[in-house]
Image (cartoon, rainbow, N blue to C red; front, side, top):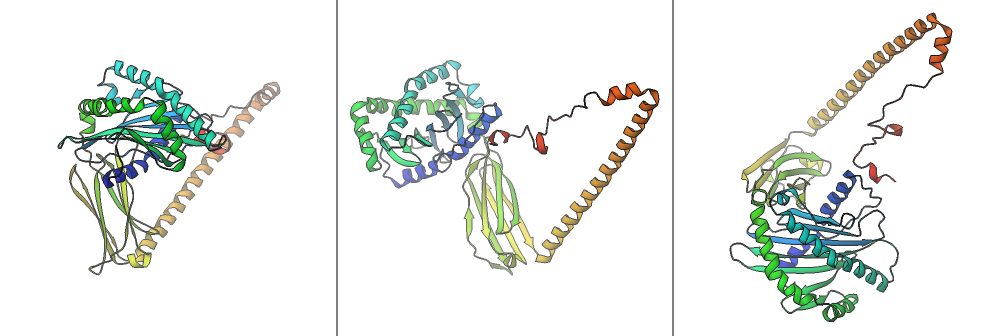
Amino acid sequence: MSFASRSLKEQYRQVRRKIKCIITLYCLHLMKTNMTTTTLLVVLCSFYVASGVNHTHQYFYTATTGIPNFPELVIVGVVDDQQSVQYDSFTKRMVPKEWLANEVPSDHWNVVTDSVAEFAPRFKVDIADLTFRHNQTEGVHTWQNMCGCTWDDESKAVDYFDQYGYDGEDFISLDLKNLRYIASNQKAFLTKTNWEYGRPDLYMWENYYPQRCIEWLKKYLQYGNSTLGRTVSPEVTLFQKDSGVVCHSTGFYPDGVVITLKGMRDGVDMHKDVNMWETLPNGDGTFQKRAELTVSFEERKKGQFTCEVAHKSGKPIVKTLIVEDGKNLVGIIIGCVIAAASLLVMIGVVVAIVMMKKKGYNQASQSDAGSDSGSDTSATLQGKEPSVVTAEHGEGGKMKNSLFSGFQQ
């Protein structure tokens, strides 16, 4: 497949923008399962699936070197915009997500795991070869592969892609139509030559992508219809921040959403630039997106801001924010500060009363004990101190069970 067409290039750019979320979530998964990660891996390519009738089945391979306690190879499978399977070189198994695990026979994943076991060592060899050729035998380096197929369920058109990147930059890609590899830079020409003449991959991919890849894409779509075909409405909030007004939409599925954010003052459009953020996954299968209108605090006075969020789950959601006067906002802030201060004072009083009562109780207890016998009192005072329960807090009051405790050096 050639990446010359503009639409495919745009899709690839979108693909590269989001894998950092998948890898970040994967790192959190490792920590939740008590697998310590001392260094975070930030990867520069990701999954993206066009909404509508264009379906995609793809895999992302990330081989790394120089990162302690992190798997040398991580594989993430994605069908449309849902993660389908994951693999790492620690477990050495392709583990399906719940929405597929309950539908696809377990024998299928055993076969897939065996297939991965055959070519997984190749990624280790490739990255070792690249670091040697680039004289980069030390430090952190990544070797990534994004491959898969697309199918339009209306036009029945199919397409394929297979691209590699080294240290976050395009390196080499497969041109399936002409059965060749395309080097993205001068350093990749040696790899191109070695792969075209030293590996039987070209003819294997010629059979895999048009047949097996599309076949399993259709099966996964059928198996996961209840998950992939669902719709979830977004939750929308419109609020102010220092730099302007933000419209935040979250919790929606599928990922296609249109946000329209406008500002009016005295009935006149402010014509301010709107910064549209990327659509990002939440980790629970839904998505989030935000738009920000850059407008100064002075310009916001007596302004009216409207955000409309359109999603296929239902009618557009409209939120309105009216800023009457800056003084109102300042008053609210002052009121919040006073309320917070009052709350702290109340908490302090309650704590003081409790401590006083506790102190009085302890003194009374010691006095009572002393009236019984001196030997008993001495034995009590020389015994072990009461143990302190620290299930939730460690030294210095820090949370020991915090999700992010594994990252502390």
